[in-house]
Image (cartoon, rainbow, N blue to C red):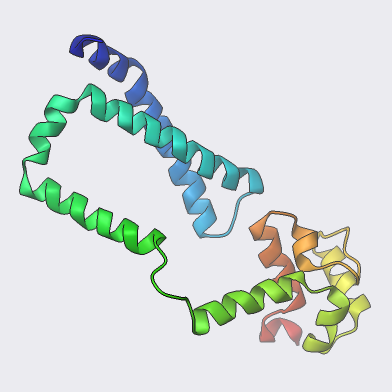
Length: 174
């Protein structure tokens, strides 16, 4: 394909596609950050990330001349080096994770997977009262044999809401 044809495809399809996918990924990413949204939002975020990568690769191929010129600038190389370093730190596990971060995550996983009848003594309440509170909060399928994770399905926002009902803030208890 000639450069003119690549630029035409880029301008007609790749640039608008990149912009639209960016908007969707940014929106779902913000929702994930604040633990709101739905399970479908999480799936959309992950899978459209691949579409975003493909669109950017096509954009770089179609604009390889200008990109090559940009690569000669120290600022561009420095920015790419910085973000590549951040990427490696963010995704490559270095050493074994230990300490309070891991302990907190493991504890939350165990709590979210425990049946409500096992959580009731931890909060000083009767299992039936927990079930009633969860049903009042919109978890119609709550029962003493189910866990918060089961009540929420794959929706992290619902999971955190269920845990907040089981473990209310101190001022909400009185």
